[in-house]
Image 1 (cartoon, rainbow, N blue to C red):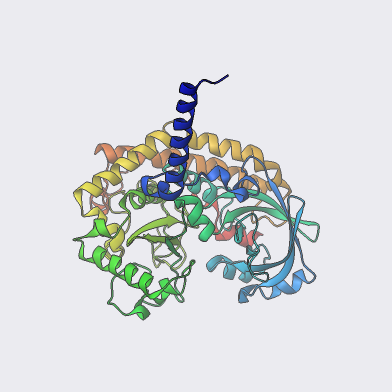
Image 2 (cartoon, rainbow, N blue to C red; image 1 turned 120 degrees about the vertical axis):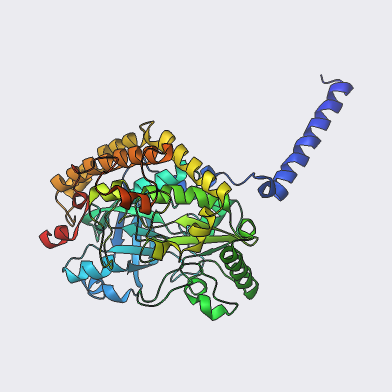
Length: 467
């Protein structure tokens, strides 16, 4: 029997617990308490990454759909995910250069976008409206995007969920793909604990245009100046949202109030990982795109997207592409792009002009190198993943490469990571050049010898020709 004194104590505890629960529900996000990812159902389903999932695309006229691939038009299909059927789902081919080149070489192994909301408003896969099926274009390892996102998550940067899937079309084997969460409102809620922030995927209509908005340059107050951003808003936006983003770009360009305009914690971590990956199909490269932009309360953060051409293998559209592995592996961490590009990328350039942020960026690189690479985590991720997907690659009927080429690519990726980590460690210690100017002055005296690596082994146009 509970006496009165103990009963009073239990009541007090119960009331306190109820108040605490109410506080967390109402204000948890304000103090850093956010929704746990483990509660997201689509993560537990499709994105459990300890196995290869099954996806069957059911469509009456698959060949007709492929013939219209370059149009990027949605078609209706049914999708069976791990034996669970979803009807009236939208599917289209996705990609820029990868889509065009796949078609030019007469191949059918396109990447696809799956949209549950396309024909049935409000339809989703356990809360997720869309995801991509990545064909691993110019990625013979099948791992570049997978590894880059794992690095981002290690550094606590919100990154799309991904997992490997064996794709069938009308019950016939099609190949091994990487399923990738398409960032949208569910992504925002999963990572930020609420859905009040705004998400954009800036992209160009034509690479020949100036595209200053994709570079996040401030060009005045006119909304039309930022059409490549606002026309590619993932979440619903208002005029107030547009004004808030433009003000952030203005603050960044002035370099006076950058702390008011940037979530520096996330963005500096993002750049640390991004620079490691040597990805020039990106904000720091010739194209300036392939990133998501998250804005909340007037502060923006850059988030990762699309790393199949990372690890030094991007050369599309570059007049004089860098292909020397010694140059790429030792590429400087302080000026990771030529001056004509660097000065046109104010988000990175102006952050690095601030001594405190520059130090924080280097501290992030130190954490990445010590915790992810020197600890051996990267090697375990690569080895465990290869053990899981190796047989599927061997059986892949549409693969861009042979299984032998895949095995070589896996070994090459591991060695690229090892040597890149070694070079960055030397740069952080001051034992190797960390700017392009210093690197040029040293000539061919590279700090880390990467001459044994052939980066084409990771994936190249020659693979498409052979295929």
